[in-house]
Amino acid sequence: MIIVCQKCKTRFHLDDEATDKPSFVARCTVCGHLFSAYKPKRVQEIAFIDLERARRDEANDHVITIGNRKGGVAKTTTCFNLGVSLALNNKKVLLVDFDAQANLTLSLGLKQQPTFYDAQKAFGRPLDDFITATPYPNLWLLPSGRNMVMLNKLYFGAQHFEYMLKDRLNGIKDQFDFILIDTPPAIEFYTLNALTASNRVVIPCQCDYLSTHGVDQVLRLIALIRKRSNPQIRSRILFTMLDRNSHSSRLIFSKIKDLYAGETFDTVVEMDGALKEAQILSMPAIHYNQQSVAGAQYLGLAKEIIANPHDPIPSSS
Image (tube, rainbow, N blue to C red; front, side):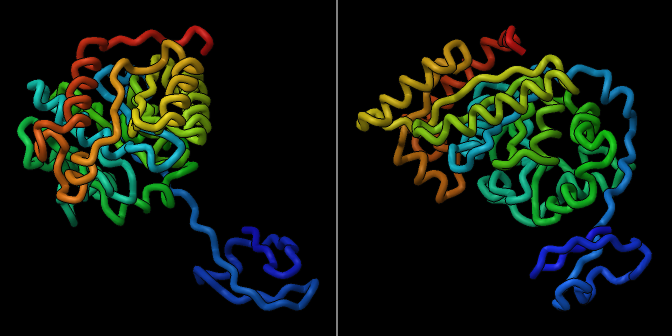
């Protein structure tokens, strides 16, 4: 293991067996500074039901990741409201909360539910045992919770870690018409697993200048995933929180749409007070207020996704 003096930044190589304590006090032999050091945790080997199948099988078009490197662009809001909208179109929908912050789970008013981490620890049990019904017809949830953070700590960097979610979803994907995966605003264990498991990506993009950077980072990551583990993956950008009364918002919307011509949804989700009020009450917009503009637009997005199941893969990839 490597420890670093916090004062002079000298690096020291110590044998992993030098101590069995998770933390200890060390003295720098260069500057004499006393500092706290921590023994690194080694990643755990991943046990799979069928690794070869997980690597061989193509991810289904009805498994969709909602993702963006930038936070605050309505990823969870989109996952929730799109899931409800697909369910209202008589589709059986599973929402997968694959973010340790568990915002999607909380949005559904659920707490202290078994999570994907629990499913991995109880590997002999089917994933069905960890899926819970929601208050909405045709809509189910694989919840998240505090212990989900352990997945990144235990498995990130382990061999084939990016196939973990795909492997488990293989056993249940035929039970649902759509599986939507909510991801955190980061590129690590959760996002890489989600992109490997899905063939379609919805990239929510707020109409502001900085959002283009998040979109560009996700598109670069998708191109990498396409080359390494999921050649069929493709994406579309969803404009969210558009303020049509704002000149700057309309201008940025036009510029981003030109920049990513042919890679955006026709549907646009506008700023809507009813949507924000629905979030406070842990409700989807269309159930909170049937006149909600954003609620109707998420219904339109659901119809667009149902009508166009096979977006083309970019020729530049």
